[in-house]
Image (tube, rainbow, N blue to C red; front, side):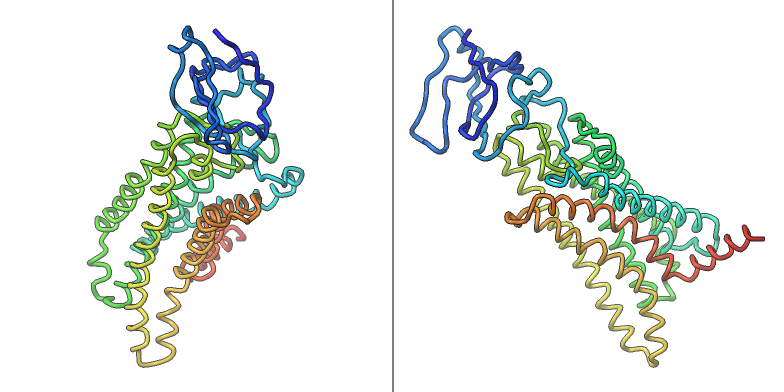
Length: 387
């Protein structure tokens, strides 16, 4: 068996075929017969001998120039890039020294999101007059926001406070699935809420007969199933990839595209599926929301008095605000992450975090400020405690 000592990977490293898993004790075992450098496409080298050909595999994977690994191959007993058992989350690249300070607004927004969404759930449960389609959808949104923010923020804060950067590979896939699944679910809930506003304004006499409790439950189940099924291929495509140029993720959580970019295989399927899925769900949902509000505006414009128009439109303002708070940073994050190659890495990561943290924080605040029924219930609760 030929053992080639490798102490560190430098800029000169390009592409190598790895054989058996477990290059330990500073040696690269089972190197393939061919070494190929994409900077010198005609330069092939022959290594190994006939005794170790049985250990060799033909899979090529790429170590791109300019990506230095902080870990040397002598540490490969704890860092294995063939079927890695753990990933390392760096946090916010370039701002490591400010992690403690950055954690303050992160923790504040997360605390507001938790408190606000639990308050919405508590008020709707305790107030019988709020047991209607609009508030059932609002409760779905609150539960979704609680799960979405809790999926990422606790791990992010543990990186900031305790330098706890390791995440298990299966936990990384689960986090990735939950993030994209509940993001898609939130978009679907906005469509359901737009449908509720459309029926309430355009056909008010049939509002409660059309959106009955079983119908609302079926709509909620459809939203859950759509998101769960469509997002499922994302972690599966990552799971089937065995070779990574590094196990270090320059992010605070396991974002799908951030993990896919580490793979040393053909990532086009996962890349284009994730991209098309994001635009498919966003475009389709925005289309249905736009159609609903086009019809709503036509009805509002046709109302006889200005006061009636303002009052009717006021019932839609909360919904429009939370839609903008969700789609604008979300779309901006998707576009900058995939096409903003000149944008600083820390800006990518900050925008991606704001996309998952700001809407769960703002949604209960917007509905609490704009919805008089929720305001009145809150005032009664505080007044009762005061007496």
